[in-house]
Each structure stands twice: as C-alpha cells, then as structure tokens.
Picture 1 (cartoon, rainbow, N blue to C red):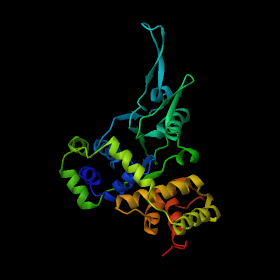
Picture 2 (picture 1 turned 45 degrees about the vertical axis):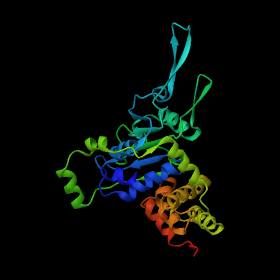
Picture 3 (picture 1 turned 90 degrees about the horizontal axis):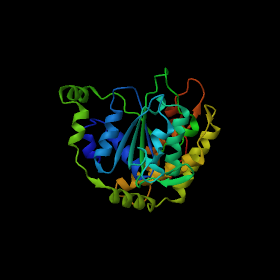
Length: 296
C-alpha cells in the first residue's frame, strides 16, 4: 500500500506509512495543512489502494447532519418511511475541509466515528467494517470556518501534516502529470477481509510492562508540564499503544519496541494537548520525549 500510494504522493513515504498504521490500528486520520500540498490526493490514493467502498463529503457551512448520516423518506408504494443511507455508510469516508461545517454537522460525523453506528428516528444502523474516516482541514483559514474543539480532535487517532516537498521532488511533480490524474492508476492491493484480518493481528502484538510504563510516564508528564495547559487523556495513551502495535506489525514484528512509541508519539499526541501562547505543540511533545526514561 505504501509503495502504491508513494507513486502519487511523492517524497512523503513516512507520512504515508503513518496513515496506513492509523488504518491498521482501527483509528481515524486527520490531515491538517495548508492548501495545495496533497491532503486530498493522499486520501484518494489511500482509498484507491484498497478495494473498499468510498465516499467523499465536501464540508460546507450549509451541510446538514442528515446529508452525512442519511434520512427517512416516505415510500408511496409501501405507505411507510424508508431509511435512505447517507455517504457515511462506506468503508472509507473522506471528510474534505471538515472545519467548514457547523459544529452540529461536525458532531454527526464524529459520533459515527466513535460509535461506528448511526441512529435515525430512534433506529440504529451499524456502519460497514472496516470503517475509516480521513478528514482534512486548512489550519490558517479563519473566515467561514468552525475549528474542531479539543474533545473532537481527541477522536482522531493520528494527525498528519504533509508540508512542502523538497526542491527535486517538487520539480518532478511540476514536470509530470497532475497527481489527481495519476490516482486512477493506483492498483488495488488489499481487500476488506485482508484489512480486517490485519487489524486483528495488530491486536495480538505484544506490549511489555516496560513499554506500558514508558507510555504512562509520557502522558503523565504532559499533565504536569508548565507549558501544557491540558495534557493527554487515557484515550490518548491507548491510541498511542495501538499505533505502536500497528507500526511494529508493519515492520514484521510481533512485539513493540521503544522506537515504535517514540516514532508515533508526535502524530498521535500533539493534536490532543492545549499549550500556552507561543508554545508549539509538536515541540512540547518532543521535549518530553527527551526527558522520559526509555527502556533498554
């Protein structure tokens, strides 16, 4: 999957691997970056590499919760209301520019992410498995946007930022065809059952007591650091361990090593904290990583 996606999203193998790790860990992905660096392309390429159902929701200020979840429509022939599923009923859902929708609409999506089900008119409908949400947002735009509150940011297992490509890669991109056009050339290399099997195997990856102690020490220090106002929740610690397991699995290991935790700490934890003015979230996590005791 990483090799296929890298054919389109050039020079970002590390970010691609982390996106795949998030999928295998059973979480959801938030891609936050400036416009035009490949957020949507990465999401589309990831979906194309798997033979799974896919939908794209372009978030706007007038988008309603029912536009996501679906609604009950009166069927004249049956003389009753029939539920018409919305675009959320797909294996992979791309929520493009999620911060452009109102908080009520954002909550409808995030509730489905957390519960993996949708309730309409008192009836509950399960979402398909695997179920993976990829949301994108532009952090620098304020006009007409509704930033996600911390409680909703915490629902995303991993947050990525792609950034600008290096000079040579950007030159190759400019000289080549549009990356969005190349997405259609990506081969499907995994199906739904293979992804489900992999997520089950990830859960079996061994986490030692020393690794667990390291993770607890890390999140505890975020709660007492003077530069951090709100530290990491227990959910954040669980997500970090899940991602470390998935990373170990992707490297063909059945046990977690400290390097797995260290590699995934920033993308899993940095978006969950609130820091004092002038403090960079990623740098705050990196500073704590340098202070914690790493087991041998």
